[in-house]
Amino acid sequence: MRTVKTTAAAVTAVLAAGAASVVAGRLAGDTALKAPPGRPLPTEPRLTVHATAAGRIAVTRDLAALRPGTYGLSGDGSHAVVGPVLSTETHSADTVVRRLERVTHGTVKPGDKVWLTPGLHVGDPGTALGLDHTDVEILGELGTLPAWFVPGIRDTWVIAVHGLGTTREHPMNIMEFLHHHRFPVLALAYRGDPGAPRRPDGLNHFGETEWRDLDAAIHYAVAGGARQVVLYGWSTGATMALRAAGRSDLSDRIAGLVLDSPVLSWEATLRALAAAGRTPGALLPLAVRAAQGRTGMSAEPLVGADAAAPGHPLAPTLIFHGPDDQVAPWGPSRRLAAEQSQRVALHTVRQAPHAAMWNADPEDYEETLRRFLTPLM
Image 1 (cartoon, helix red, strand yellow):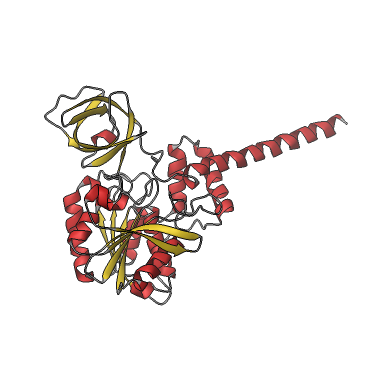
Image 2 (cartoon, rainbow, N blue to C red):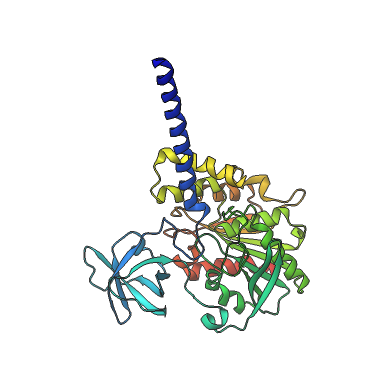
């Protein structure tokens, strides 16, 4: 009898431990699967504002605070734009002084908790950039998708789609550039975004299902007079662009792809975000398995033949990516560029975090973009 009780207790302990592991894996995966749009990813450190003055702001000394380039600085209820580190200013052992370009929303004051973001603009193309635009509605498979349309005279449209941790405000970083070159621009909000339909399961599928919303935008553009389109995506938006290029029945209308920090291995990205959210390393494989079970996604990286439509070569593609991306490793981007070197160009950007390749050096980024887009006009 004692042996039976001991065995039963051991089995119960094993089952309890197994159940606890499943729950822990599920919770760890939620860091990525439920990442809300417009909120910082766990890889982005919180900084404290120490002081502000005319054209200057001092924040906590951190590797993030020392990044070159121009960034948004967001807090709860505030947004500002900060420029480069000011080498002429006195920096304490605990602070970094950057140029304060402008405060775009709310107030920024000492003691505020803030984080750097790739998005420089808040509002819409009219209020933020002074660009004429139209609020349009696109019929997707889950309902109506809101989008901004900025008109241009060309019959090649650019469809811009944001990624993890951002909203359709993010593409406004390059909207003035595209408008200057007379491209019509369609900036899309997709499932899970503010104003767009909810995801059926409430989970981010890293572009695996979301690409269908981008496909709806392609159909909208073609129906609206676009002869061809360029798909421009950041992060999982870049993944959506690749999926659409490989699966849309209008893939022959896709003249090119611009991919900024593409998530080509959702498994690697989920691990990175879970680890940044302080998930113990032993639980990371459980988080991946839990995510696969909940979403049905394959763990295979989106590279090689899967990046092209059957029977069709991948459209000319420009990738902006670099080794300092802690969310989407750039190894898969390098492999894709190597495997399809005739169609894919990789522009390496260093010292730039995820989806912020433009921020590190806007002038170089836009010149590279101009050279890529010119033959597609």
